[in-house]
Length: 445
Image: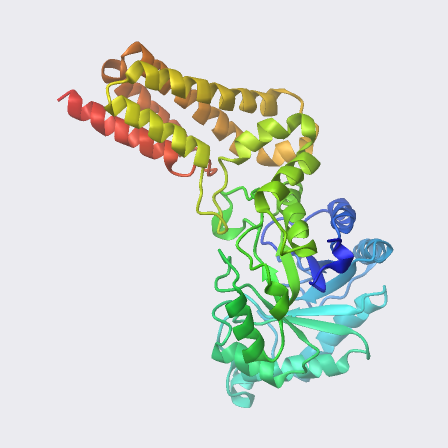
C-alpha cells in the first residue's frame, strides 16, 4: 500500500520535545525526510522555543520570521501540511479579551507567511484556574477552555483549521474534562490524545473508540515516541514502532510522532512510523526496523549498529531491554552453575567479541552518518564498556579465577557501569555481575 492509499488522513511528526529545539537546517531536512516516507504533516511546537511558550504574545520579526517563512515554503513545496502551535496556558488570563487578541494577533502574524493550520496546546499546565478574574468568570478549567477554544476558532478565517491539545491529554478517553471539552467545541476542531499514558505502551482500538464516542470526534494521536525528554534522557529510542492497533484508523484521524532532541537518531523510529501509517494492517515492526537502519545508518554500518541498537531497546514501547545479551548472560550463569566454567567462558567470549567488534566499528570505523554517531556516542561508549566487561568475565571463567580474582574485578566493573548514565543492556549486565559477586562472596567465606 502506498502512503496515498493510507487509511490515515494525518501522518506526520511534531517537534514537541523539552530541551534544545532543532536547528533551522534540521527542520528543512526533516521535511524532506518525512515527505520521502509518505508522511504529510509537520507540527511546529518546540517546548523550549520562547516564542511558542513563554513569550507566546511576542510577534515574529526579522530573521526569526524569515526562517519560519522558509520552513512554511519548504513544507508547501513537498506537500506537507504545516501546523503552527502556541502554548499560552502558563500565563494566559482566559477572561481577559486582550489575551485572546494577543493569541489571534500571533496567529495572524504567521498567517501572513502562508500558515493556515493552527494548534492551541493546553498541555502541561496547572489543572486549576490561576487568575482571580478567571475563577470568578468560569466554573472550572474546562469551562474556560471551552470558551477560549470556541472564540479562537471563530476568529480564524473560513477554511483555516485548529487542533487542540487538552490539559487532560491521556487516559481512558472518557474523563470528565475531555468529554466536556469535546462535546462543547466545534466538531471540525481536532483533539490531540496520547493514549492511556503520556508515553503509551499500546494504543488499542477499544480505547480509540471510547475517545471518539466521548468527545464526538476521532482522536489525532500525539504519540510520544521516540521522544526521550524529561525523565527519559538516559534512554536512546531507536527501536521500531510497535503496539499500535492495526485498525486504529477506524477511530483516529492519524498519528503525529514526537521526536527526540537527538534529531538524526529520531529518523530511525520515524521511518518505521511512516511504514505503519502507510499500511498498518501489513506492518511488520522488525522488517521495518531493518529497512530503517539501512536507510538512516547506511548499509555498510547497519550490522554493527543493529548489534548496538538491540541493547538500547528500553522505552515505553518495549518490555525487551537487551534480548541477545540477556540470553547470553543467562546461558553463561547457567553453565557456571553446572560446573562448565570453561565452556561457559568460551561461549560468552565468542558472543562478546561480536559486540566488541561492533563497538570498534562504530567508534573507530568512520561511519557514514557522523551526526547520528555523535548523538549516540554516550550509549555506544557504554556498549563498548559492557562488551569489555563480558570479555573479562569470560576470561575469568576460562582461567578458573572467578573466585580468586573475580571479586575485585567485578566490583570495579559494576562501579564503572553505574557511573555512566546512558541506559544500555537494561538491567541484564548489572544483575549478572551482582549475582556473580554474591556467589563469589559466599564461596570465599
